[in-house]
Image (cartoon, rainbow, N blue to C red):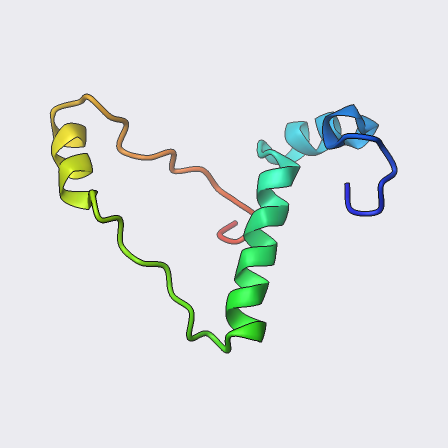
Length: 79
């Protein structure tokens, strides 16, 4: 994926193995690791995620059962 072993990450023979083992898309995991590294190393921890400006509306729709409460997925950062 990083070194170009396959023309596309989904063509890699290791993609399926990673997904089966960890239950996550390796591309998404790489994005999480890159973002966390940038936040901690480049920005010294000063860069923080902003709350969703539509958070109240989302919570209201979740309470009504119109939106899922969240994935609760374990990722490479919180496993």
